[in-house]
Length: 386
Image (cartoon, rainbow, N blue to C red; front, side):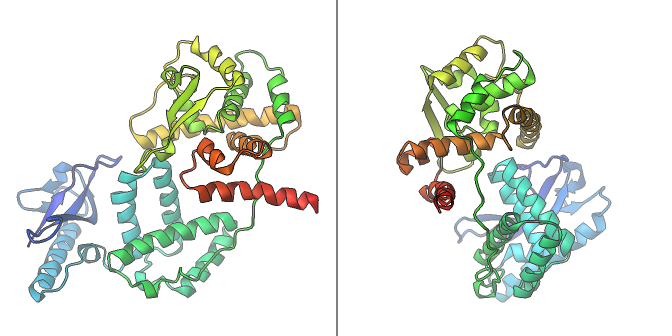
Protein backbone atom coordinates (compact mmCIF):
# COMPACT_ATOMS: atom_id res chain seq x y z
CA UNK A 1 0.00 0.00 0.00
CA UNK A 2 1.31 3.43 -0.98
CA UNK A 3 0.07 6.78 0.36
CA UNK A 4 0.77 10.03 -1.51
CA UNK A 5 -0.63 13.53 -1.91
CA UNK A 6 -1.80 14.87 -5.29
CA UNK A 7 -3.33 18.05 -6.69
CA UNK A 8 -6.60 16.96 -8.34
CA UNK A 9 -6.56 18.88 -11.64
CA UNK A 10 -9.77 17.32 -12.96
CA UNK A 11 -11.95 19.65 -10.90
CA UNK A 12 -11.05 23.35 -11.10
CA UNK A 13 -13.05 25.60 -8.80
CA UNK A 14 -14.38 29.02 -9.76
CA UNK A 15 -11.46 30.79 -8.08
CA UNK A 16 -8.94 28.86 -10.21
CA UNK A 17 -7.81 26.51 -7.44
CA UNK A 18 -7.82 22.71 -7.35
CA UNK A 19 -8.49 20.35 -4.40
CA UNK A 20 -5.60 18.55 -2.76
CA UNK A 21 -6.26 14.85 -2.17
CA UNK A 22 -4.67 11.87 -0.49
CA UNK A 23 -4.08 9.01 -2.89
CA UNK A 24 -4.06 5.49 -1.51
CA UNK A 25 -2.78 2.79 -3.85
CA UNK A 26 -3.34 -0.85 -2.90
CA UNK A 27 -2.73 -3.47 -5.59
CA UNK A 28 -4.79 -5.99 -3.63
CA UNK A 29 -7.85 -3.75 -3.35
CA UNK A 30 -10.67 -2.95 -5.79
CA UNK A 31 -10.39 -0.30 -7.02
CA UNK A 32 -6.63 -0.11 -6.59
CA UNK A 33 -6.59 3.69 -6.32
CA UNK A 34 -8.71 5.75 -3.97
CA UNK A 35 -8.70 9.54 -3.71
CA UNK A 36 -9.97 11.45 -0.69
CA UNK A 37 -10.20 15.22 -0.04
CA UNK A 38 -8.00 17.13 2.41
CA UNK A 39 -10.10 20.33 2.48
CA UNK A 40 -7.11 22.24 1.00
CA UNK A 41 -7.41 24.16 -2.30
CA UNK A 42 -4.38 25.44 -4.25
CA UNK A 43 -3.22 26.73 -7.60
CA UNK A 44 -0.57 24.65 -9.46
CA UNK A 45 2.07 27.25 -8.51
CA UNK A 46 1.29 26.76 -4.83
CA UNK A 47 1.88 23.00 -4.93
CA UNK A 48 5.44 21.64 -5.18
CA UNK A 49 4.84 18.23 -6.71
CA UNK A 50 8.44 17.11 -6.39
CA UNK A 51 8.63 17.64 -2.63
CA UNK A 52 4.85 17.24 -1.92
CA UNK A 53 4.50 20.50 -0.05
CA UNK A 54 2.61 23.78 -0.21
CA UNK A 55 4.55 26.91 -1.21
CA UNK A 56 3.76 30.60 -1.80
CA UNK A 57 0.49 30.39 0.12
CA UNK A 58 -0.51 32.45 3.22
CA UNK A 59 -1.24 29.18 5.06
CA UNK A 60 1.73 27.20 3.72
CA UNK A 61 3.12 26.31 7.15
CA UNK A 62 -0.23 25.19 8.58
CA UNK A 63 -1.10 23.21 5.46
CA UNK A 64 2.24 21.40 5.38
CA UNK A 65 1.96 20.49 9.06
CA UNK A 66 -1.57 19.21 8.44
CA UNK A 67 -0.39 17.07 5.50
CA UNK A 68 2.50 15.58 7.48
CA UNK A 69 0.28 14.82 10.48
CA UNK A 70 -2.27 13.05 8.34
CA UNK A 71 0.38 11.04 6.49
CA UNK A 72 1.89 10.05 9.85
CA UNK A 73 -1.55 9.09 11.14
CA UNK A 74 -2.24 6.93 8.10
CA UNK A 75 1.17 5.26 8.25
CA UNK A 76 0.55 4.49 11.92
CA UNK A 77 -2.80 2.89 11.12
CA UNK A 78 -1.21 0.81 8.35
CA UNK A 79 1.59 -0.39 10.67
CA UNK A 80 -0.97 -1.55 13.22
CA UNK A 81 -2.89 -3.37 10.48
CA UNK A 82 -6.01 -1.26 11.01
CA UNK A 83 -8.46 -0.41 8.24
CA UNK A 84 -7.47 3.00 6.91
CA UNK A 85 -10.35 5.46 6.79
CA UNK A 86 -8.72 8.23 4.77
CA UNK A 87 -11.71 10.54 4.87
CA UNK A 88 -11.86 10.38 8.64
CA UNK A 89 -8.12 11.00 8.86
CA UNK A 90 -8.46 14.12 6.70
CA UNK A 91 -11.65 15.53 8.15
CA UNK A 92 -11.16 14.54 11.75
CA UNK A 93 -14.38 14.58 13.77
CA UNK A 94 -15.76 17.73 12.10
CA UNK A 95 -19.20 17.27 10.56
CA UNK A 96 -18.93 20.74 8.98
CA UNK A 97 -15.66 19.85 7.21
CA UNK A 98 -17.11 16.54 6.03
CA UNK A 99 -20.21 18.31 4.65
CA UNK A 100 -18.02 20.89 2.84
CA UNK A 101 -15.72 18.22 1.41
CA UNK A 102 -18.67 16.14 0.17
CA UNK A 103 -20.26 19.27 -1.28
CA UNK A 104 -17.16 20.20 -3.30
CA UNK A 105 -15.94 16.75 -4.23
CA UNK A 106 -19.21 14.97 -5.01
CA UNK A 107 -22.24 17.23 -5.32
CA UNK A 108 -20.45 19.98 -7.24
CA UNK A 109 -19.06 17.48 -9.75
CA UNK A 110 -21.96 15.06 -10.14
CA UNK A 111 -25.06 17.21 -9.68
CA UNK A 112 -26.67 20.32 -11.11
CA UNK A 113 -25.69 23.86 -10.13
CA UNK A 114 -29.07 24.44 -8.48
CA UNK A 115 -28.64 21.28 -6.36
CA UNK A 116 -25.16 22.44 -5.32
CA UNK A 117 -26.36 25.96 -4.48
CA UNK A 118 -29.21 24.60 -2.37
CA UNK A 119 -26.85 22.42 -0.35
CA UNK A 120 -24.34 25.26 -0.08
CA UNK A 121 -26.95 27.58 1.47
CA UNK A 122 -27.99 24.87 3.93
CA UNK A 123 -24.37 24.28 4.94
CA UNK A 124 -23.80 28.03 5.35
CA UNK A 125 -26.82 28.24 7.65
CA UNK A 126 -25.66 25.23 9.67
CA UNK A 127 -22.11 26.59 9.94
CA UNK A 128 -23.40 29.98 11.12
CA UNK A 129 -25.27 28.20 13.93
CA UNK A 130 -22.41 25.86 14.92
CA UNK A 131 -19.10 26.50 13.08
CA UNK A 132 -17.26 23.75 15.00
CA UNK A 133 -20.01 21.13 14.84
CA UNK A 134 -18.56 17.64 15.38
CA UNK A 135 -20.13 14.28 14.53
CA UNK A 136 -20.59 13.47 18.21
CA UNK A 137 -22.49 16.76 18.65
CA UNK A 138 -25.10 15.73 16.06
CA UNK A 139 -27.58 14.17 18.47
CA UNK A 140 -31.29 14.43 19.34
CA UNK A 141 -30.73 17.49 21.52
CA UNK A 142 -28.91 19.22 18.67
CA UNK A 143 -31.60 18.60 16.04
CA UNK A 144 -34.32 19.86 18.39
CA UNK A 145 -32.39 23.04 19.21
CA UNK A 146 -31.44 23.59 15.57
CA UNK A 147 -35.10 23.24 14.57
CA UNK A 148 -35.97 25.99 17.08
CA UNK A 149 -33.14 28.09 15.60
CA UNK A 150 -34.57 27.68 12.08
CA UNK A 151 -38.01 28.68 13.33
CA UNK A 152 -36.42 31.80 14.82
CA UNK A 153 -35.01 32.62 11.37
CA UNK A 154 -38.54 32.55 10.00
CA UNK A 155 -38.14 29.21 8.19
CA UNK A 156 -41.47 27.47 7.63
CA UNK A 157 -42.13 23.71 7.85
CA UNK A 158 -41.28 23.07 4.17
CA UNK A 159 -37.90 24.85 4.43
CA UNK A 160 -37.03 23.17 7.73
CA UNK A 161 -38.00 19.75 6.38
CA UNK A 162 -35.76 20.31 3.34
CA UNK A 163 -32.86 21.43 5.56
CA UNK A 164 -32.98 18.33 7.73
CA UNK A 165 -33.52 16.03 4.75
CA UNK A 166 -30.29 17.23 3.12
CA UNK A 167 -28.30 17.22 6.38
CA UNK A 168 -29.51 13.66 7.02
CA UNK A 169 -28.34 12.63 3.55
CA UNK A 170 -24.80 13.87 4.31
CA UNK A 171 -24.86 12.12 7.69
CA UNK A 172 -25.98 8.89 6.00
CA UNK A 173 -23.03 9.13 3.61
CA UNK A 174 -20.72 9.33 6.64
CA UNK A 175 -22.42 6.19 7.98
CA UNK A 176 -21.64 4.40 4.72
CA UNK A 177 -17.99 5.42 5.09
CA UNK A 178 -18.02 4.02 8.64
CA UNK A 179 -17.20 7.39 10.20
CA UNK A 180 -20.27 7.15 12.43
CA UNK A 181 -22.67 4.35 13.34
CA UNK A 182 -26.27 4.21 12.18
CA UNK A 183 -27.52 3.67 15.72
CA UNK A 184 -26.04 7.07 16.64
CA UNK A 185 -28.10 8.92 14.01
CA UNK A 186 -30.63 11.34 15.54
CA UNK A 187 -32.54 11.63 12.25
CA UNK A 188 -34.23 8.23 12.21
CA UNK A 189 -37.05 9.31 14.53
CA UNK A 190 -36.95 13.06 13.93
CA UNK A 191 -39.55 14.58 11.61
CA UNK A 192 -40.70 18.07 10.69
CA UNK A 193 -44.43 17.89 10.02
CA UNK A 194 -45.21 19.56 6.71
CA UNK A 195 -48.84 20.59 6.21
CA UNK A 196 -50.37 20.07 2.80
CA UNK A 197 -49.84 23.20 0.74
CA UNK A 198 -52.51 24.37 -1.67
CA UNK A 199 -51.16 24.40 -5.20
CA UNK A 200 -51.83 27.61 -7.09
CA UNK A 201 -53.44 26.88 -10.45
CA UNK A 202 -55.80 28.50 -12.90
CA UNK A 203 -59.06 27.21 -14.28
CA UNK A 204 -59.24 26.99 -18.07
CA UNK A 205 -61.52 30.08 -18.43
CA UNK A 206 -58.79 32.09 -16.66
CA UNK A 207 -56.22 30.75 -19.11
CA UNK A 208 -58.43 31.89 -21.96
CA UNK A 209 -58.49 35.33 -20.34
CA UNK A 210 -54.69 35.42 -20.51
CA UNK A 211 -54.84 34.36 -24.18
CA UNK A 212 -57.37 37.07 -25.05
CA UNK A 213 -55.83 39.89 -22.98
CA UNK A 214 -54.36 42.70 -25.05
CA UNK A 215 -50.67 43.52 -24.72
CA UNK A 216 -48.68 45.66 -27.13
CA UNK A 217 -46.89 43.44 -29.62
CA UNK A 218 -43.22 42.80 -28.77
CA UNK A 219 -43.65 44.33 -25.32
CA UNK A 220 -42.18 42.49 -22.34
CA UNK A 221 -45.63 41.42 -21.14
CA UNK A 222 -46.60 40.25 -24.63
CA UNK A 223 -43.54 37.99 -24.85
CA UNK A 224 -43.95 36.72 -21.28
CA UNK A 225 -47.62 35.88 -21.92
CA UNK A 226 -46.52 33.84 -24.95
CA UNK A 227 -43.86 32.00 -22.92
CA UNK A 228 -46.33 31.17 -20.13
CA UNK A 229 -49.01 29.89 -22.51
CA UNK A 230 -46.44 27.79 -24.37
CA UNK A 231 -45.44 26.28 -21.04
CA UNK A 232 -49.06 25.41 -20.24
CA UNK A 233 -49.76 23.87 -23.63
CA UNK A 234 -46.51 21.87 -23.45
CA UNK A 235 -47.25 19.97 -20.24
CA UNK A 236 -45.84 22.64 -17.91
CA UNK A 237 -42.31 22.87 -19.31
CA UNK A 238 -40.09 24.60 -16.74
CA UNK A 239 -38.70 28.08 -17.42
CA UNK A 240 -35.09 26.85 -17.41
CA UNK A 241 -35.89 24.33 -20.15
CA UNK A 242 -38.00 26.86 -22.05
CA UNK A 243 -35.14 29.37 -22.14
CA UNK A 244 -32.72 26.73 -23.45
CA UNK A 245 -34.94 25.58 -26.34
CA UNK A 246 -33.58 25.94 -29.86
CA UNK A 247 -35.38 25.79 -33.19
CA UNK A 248 -33.99 22.29 -33.64
CA UNK A 249 -36.13 21.17 -30.68
CA UNK A 250 -39.23 21.60 -32.86
CA UNK A 251 -39.49 18.49 -35.04
CA UNK A 252 -42.48 17.82 -37.33
CA UNK A 253 -45.08 19.18 -34.94
CA UNK A 254 -43.42 17.84 -31.79
CA UNK A 255 -41.37 19.43 -29.04
CA UNK A 256 -38.34 17.23 -28.29
CA UNK A 257 -35.91 18.09 -25.50
CA UNK A 258 -34.08 16.71 -22.48
CA UNK A 259 -35.04 18.10 -19.09
CA UNK A 260 -32.06 20.06 -17.76
CA UNK A 261 -32.97 19.03 -14.22
CA UNK A 262 -32.35 15.37 -15.12
CA UNK A 263 -29.07 15.69 -17.02
CA UNK A 264 -27.04 14.30 -14.11
CA UNK A 265 -29.36 11.30 -13.65
CA UNK A 266 -28.36 7.84 -14.82
CA UNK A 267 -31.30 8.01 -17.24
CA UNK A 268 -32.04 11.66 -18.20
CA UNK A 269 -35.67 12.51 -18.92
CA UNK A 270 -36.15 12.90 -22.69
CA UNK A 271 -39.50 14.45 -23.57
CA UNK A 272 -41.44 14.31 -26.84
CA UNK A 273 -44.64 16.32 -26.71
CA UNK A 274 -47.15 16.77 -29.51
CA UNK A 275 -47.65 20.50 -30.03
CA UNK A 276 -51.23 21.72 -29.63
CA UNK A 277 -52.51 24.29 -32.20
CA UNK A 278 -52.13 27.05 -29.58
CA UNK A 279 -48.50 26.11 -29.00
CA UNK A 280 -47.82 25.88 -32.74
CA UNK A 281 -49.18 29.40 -33.24
CA UNK A 282 -46.70 30.69 -30.63
CA UNK A 283 -43.81 28.72 -32.14
CA UNK A 284 -44.55 30.14 -35.61
CA UNK A 285 -44.00 33.66 -34.28
CA UNK A 286 -40.49 32.89 -33.02
CA UNK A 287 -39.33 30.52 -35.77
CA UNK A 288 -39.29 33.53 -38.13
CA UNK A 289 -36.89 35.45 -35.88
CA UNK A 290 -33.11 35.30 -36.05
CA UNK A 291 -32.44 34.12 -32.52
CA UNK A 292 -29.89 31.50 -31.52
CA UNK A 293 -32.39 30.20 -28.95
CA UNK A 294 -36.01 29.69 -29.99
CA UNK A 295 -37.64 32.32 -27.79
CA UNK A 296 -34.71 34.74 -27.56
CA UNK A 297 -34.89 34.75 -23.75
CA UNK A 298 -31.10 34.35 -23.72
CA UNK A 299 -28.54 35.19 -26.42
CA UNK A 300 -25.93 32.66 -25.31
CA UNK A 301 -25.51 30.12 -22.53
CA UNK A 302 -22.26 30.06 -20.51
CA UNK A 303 -20.47 26.71 -20.46
CA UNK A 304 -19.96 26.95 -16.70
CA UNK A 305 -23.11 25.49 -15.14
CA UNK A 306 -23.10 27.97 -12.24
CA UNK A 307 -22.89 30.99 -14.56
CA UNK A 308 -25.62 29.44 -16.73
CA UNK A 309 -27.89 28.97 -13.70
CA UNK A 310 -27.30 32.57 -12.57
CA UNK A 311 -28.27 33.86 -16.04
CA UNK A 312 -31.41 31.70 -16.21
CA UNK A 313 -32.46 32.79 -12.69
CA UNK A 314 -32.12 36.48 -13.64
CA UNK A 315 -34.28 35.96 -16.72
CA UNK A 316 -36.80 34.02 -14.65
CA UNK A 317 -37.05 36.90 -12.15
CA UNK A 318 -37.72 39.37 -14.96
CA UNK A 319 -40.38 37.07 -16.39
CA UNK A 320 -42.04 36.68 -12.97
CA UNK A 321 -42.20 40.48 -12.60
CA UNK A 322 -44.03 40.65 -15.91
CA UNK A 323 -46.33 37.81 -14.83
CA UNK A 324 -47.33 39.83 -11.76
CA UNK A 325 -48.53 42.62 -14.05
CA UNK A 326 -50.39 40.12 -16.22
CA UNK A 327 -52.00 38.59 -13.12
CA UNK A 328 -53.20 42.02 -11.98
CA UNK A 329 -54.73 42.67 -15.38
CA UNK A 330 -56.96 39.57 -15.17
CA UNK A 331 -57.55 39.64 -11.41
CA UNK A 332 -55.45 36.60 -10.40
CA UNK A 333 -53.65 36.45 -7.04
CA UNK A 334 -50.43 34.85 -8.21
CA UNK A 335 -48.95 33.83 -11.53
CA UNK A 336 -45.65 32.04 -12.09
CA UNK A 337 -44.24 29.46 -14.46
CA UNK A 338 -44.88 26.78 -11.85
CA UNK A 339 -48.53 27.85 -11.93
CA UNK A 340 -48.66 26.77 -15.57
CA UNK A 341 -47.37 23.33 -14.54
CA UNK A 342 -49.97 23.04 -11.76
CA UNK A 343 -52.74 24.27 -14.06
CA UNK A 344 -51.84 21.71 -16.72
CA UNK A 345 -51.78 18.85 -14.21
CA UNK A 346 -55.13 19.88 -12.74
CA UNK A 347 -56.66 20.20 -16.22
CA UNK A 348 -55.48 16.65 -17.06
CA UNK A 349 -56.95 15.32 -13.83
CA UNK A 350 -60.34 16.89 -14.54
CA UNK A 351 -60.26 15.32 -18.00
CA UNK A 352 -59.87 11.91 -16.27
CA UNK A 353 -56.45 11.27 -17.83
CA UNK A 354 -54.75 8.35 -16.01
CA UNK A 355 -52.08 9.36 -13.51
CA UNK A 356 -49.47 7.17 -15.23
CA UNK A 357 -49.98 9.25 -18.38
CA UNK A 358 -49.81 12.47 -16.35
CA UNK A 359 -46.53 11.21 -14.83
CA UNK A 360 -45.10 10.81 -18.34
CA UNK A 361 -46.39 14.22 -19.45
CA UNK A 362 -44.94 16.02 -16.42
CA UNK A 363 -41.64 14.14 -16.72
CA UNK A 364 -41.72 12.78 -13.17
CA UNK A 365 -39.12 10.06 -12.66
CA UNK A 366 -41.15 8.31 -9.95
CA UNK A 367 -44.89 7.60 -9.93
CA UNK A 368 -44.97 8.38 -6.20
CA UNK A 369 -43.99 11.98 -7.08
CA UNK A 370 -47.02 12.27 -9.36
CA UNK A 371 -49.31 10.71 -6.74
CA UNK A 372 -48.18 13.19 -4.11
CA UNK A 373 -48.37 16.04 -6.63
CA UNK A 374 -51.98 15.20 -7.56
CA UNK A 375 -53.17 14.45 -4.01
CA UNK A 376 -53.13 18.16 -3.16
CA UNK A 377 -55.80 18.82 -5.78
CA UNK A 378 -58.00 15.97 -4.48
CA UNK A 379 -57.85 17.26 -0.90
CA UNK A 380 -58.91 20.76 -1.97
CA UNK A 381 -61.93 19.32 -3.81
CA UNK A 382 -62.85 17.33 -0.68
CA UNK A 383 -62.67 20.52 1.39
CA UNK A 384 -64.92 22.31 -1.07
CA UNK A 385 -67.38 19.40 -1.06
CA UNK A 386 -67.62 19.45 2.72
